[in-house]
Image (cartoon, rainbow, N blue to C red; front, side):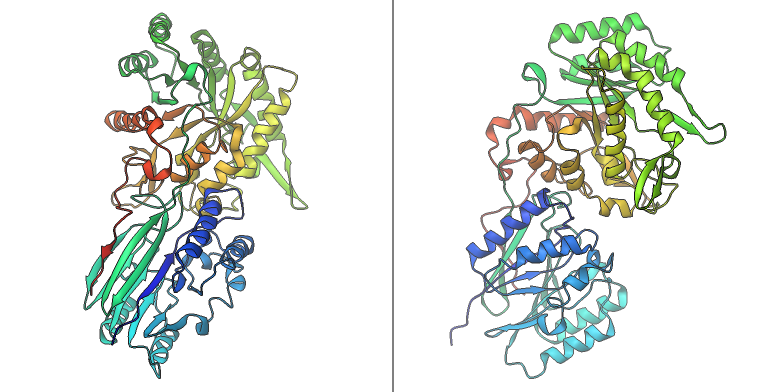
Length: 554
């Protein structure tokens, strides 16, 4: 007897926010259209479709899934448990009776592992789901892969899958693509559809096909929107790639001359270097060709004891140095003060405090002359220490996007009488990704791009990684690939290509000199080969074959 062929698509780890203008929302609409074109037996959704379990993001996701023209099976992920609202939206879709379905001789089960465990009620549900069914073949889809579950759940489920003849277990959560044989069945883990978190390649969906018992083929289908990297928003056809180097600015200028880079950000710790030597080094750079020069200033801090802004004299001296150097842009951090010190919330509306107004006055006094001379005032976002609660009044000010924009607006408004003034954001992508914990998920990178948009004047780019031993995230690591373990630049390049964000200077801010040089070479090659890139599938650093499938015989 000829067996029936089976086909299904797996969608996972989208991390949709409330903002409809993000790359993740575009990827979801593409995925729905692609599923309708493929016409599989069903679409399996394996959780983490929202980033912070809000009702808005869950509703937007459900509206998109309503367009799918084949049956949709759903099981939640841990992201759907971050708040109480998403699961109320997904209540019907995630109900036990909807998480089991038969397609001919194939039984599909979607247990709920959204807490990282397989609870007793889910184990009982799995056993009940096998009773009385005529389907002889078995497939399990869930959010957590086996190696990310607690030990007891992993052991129980591994044994259950083996004893009950399950051919294939499919999961998400890890944002990587891998398969392995496990006690008579195959486990396939997918990287998911998040343009900012998919590791090793573009985000996408996965098509699984089978024509006989125990034999499956997996085909990764990447989200591949149009990519247009050039021209930039810089003058004279300049490539946007450069670096930010702390310490001696004369040495930084010399390294830049040797490298041939057109963009440089200097960040002297003090002013004990030779101004004449810096002038000569910068003159050599400009004689070589167009140069975009940024000068990163020291911080302005709030002293709660004295009730005053500190650091103004030091910043003023550096501004004078920057003007003498012919800087195109000044980079300055947002005020170093707590959120509670800068704003008070009354009737659900934030109001500036005296501290806030003192900082506005300090910014106007320090940067007004430079702004009048056409120098851009680029205000950089900072980040919180690990495990900082999103609602803590001790949280760093302007680590929330709305606060950040209010601060930029306040500084710009105070300089509105200066026609030449251009005040905007210096977006540090790594700081936005590593922002204390909850804020990382409340404000995914796509929200930073969509909300800041053309207000951005330039970027700091680096990878975020964990410190050995502690597991704490640290910034300023080498970007070893476009689709990295913490920051994937697929979403960034989509926002860049669509002109959602400014095509401004990309300052590689990697502390290690060798890592900085390698990162610069990677991005320089990207832009130098921009004419060969028509869509995301053409981007370098791709590991996955997107044409042929991987055999998953169990």
